[in-house]
Every structure is written in C-alpha cells, then in structure tokens.
Image (cartoon, rainbow, N blue to C red):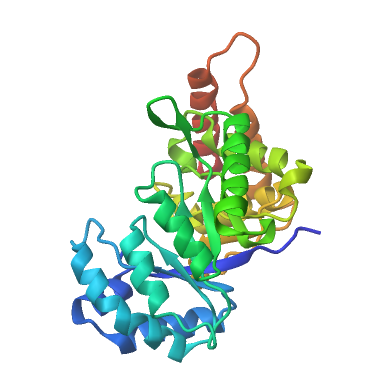
Length: 302
C-alpha cells in the first residue's frame, strides 16, 4: 500500500491570486479564509510566505510590519501549526515572537541551509522557540563558499552535517527535523536532479544516525511548465514514487488533492520509466542521460 504524505498547505503565498489580493488589501479575513480552507482539507501545517513574486513586489519591511497582525489572525482561524517560510532571520524572529504555542503545536522554521545569512542566529531562534526546522540539503558548504549538491552522497552529507549542527547548537531531535533534498521541475530536469533527490532520501533513510528525520519537498514546482491537463497527475505520481523512498511531507496546494496515485496508475508507470531513462549508462555524461529523461517525460502527455 502506498504511504500517505502529510501536506504543508502552501496557499498563503503571493504566487496565488487569493493570497496576493489579501496582501495588497492587508486583509486578515482573506488570509483567515485561506487558513480555514486548508485546515478543512487536512493540511498538517500551513506555510506562511509573504515574499514577492513576478506578479507583486514586496519589501521586507512591509512583511515585517504585517506579521504581528497576521500570525495571531491565522492562529485565531485554526489551530493547525504554521510553517514560517522565508530565508530572512528577521522574518522568522518577528513571526515567532507573535506565535502563541498555547494555540497551536510547534511551528516549523523553513529553512536553514548552507547559503543562509545569519545561520547562528537562525539556530538560536530554533532553540529559543523550540521549533521544528526544515534543512535545505540540496546545497552544501565548500571551500570558499557554498555549492549545489549534485549527487545523492552530497545531499546525504549535507543532511548529516545539519542534523548534527541542529543537535549541538539548537538541541533538536531528529524527529523535529524535515530534510528537503530538493525537487527540480521534471520537464526541465536535464541534470538528473529528481533522481538525485530520490536516491538521497533512500541513503538518508538507511543511515541509523539519521533515524526519525522527516522529508519534505516543494511539490508545486515539480510539474511547472507541463500541460495543465497532466500537471496534477504528475505531482501525484511523484508522491507515489517518492513516498516509497521515504517522503512523508510535501509543501503543496491542498485544493489539488495531493495524494499518491495507485502504484499501477499509467502516469506513475510512465513517470518511473522516464526517470529510469535519466540514469547514466556506461560511458555517458549526465547531460546525455538528462536529455533522454526529458524526452521520455514529454512522451507522458503525448
């Protein structure tokens, strides 16, 4: 039986028109309606991302000024805990200062990563407010800076580094940590990144030192650029495959009923075949395999 995947509802995000309109109007009622609808659809957490998009420009000061009103309003609307989603430590500090643990469970700090500014301060917030935390394991420290992880071993090593760091510096248990191995848009994945994430989850699941960690990915990015009629089935097919590798949470739109498809569903079979085409054969470079995968992905909707 295919495992279910917990949903971190992502509709409080200005990429969606309802959230964008609510931010423009500073409408707490609009955001509360989004919170209630996602809670009613079974979301385990509600992602709170006020950043700008291509459709709307948002200055950090605007977000920081609105959070003291928004966080209590969301908690008034539903007891579902929040996932505070922003790279800025200032955003997290303001949101957590106005988060009432008596009304909801532990929030999620989303996220810590090699590229984050003020990483020590972020770890301090995690410990002080006793939060769960997302680790962006798709990037790692290298001499002189940071780099993208381009192998399952790289992702595994990044996860190990941050799990240890969070244990030592923030007192986190593994079951308070959500590892994000990265998820590329499958229609443009000519570098095997989807397979890297899947294989990394399998490596991490097999590591006894990382027993108990959760996994999460940004599911809404997966089918970006694919035809609308296949988009939601592609997302669900990925959930079917990834849940077998260990995925237990996804940041996703609950309106799309993001549940895994049956193992024998045609889209699951075709997506798995396409990902298999992305495996490098003897003497091949990664790009050759990646373009073969991309061609196979396009055949799913042909």
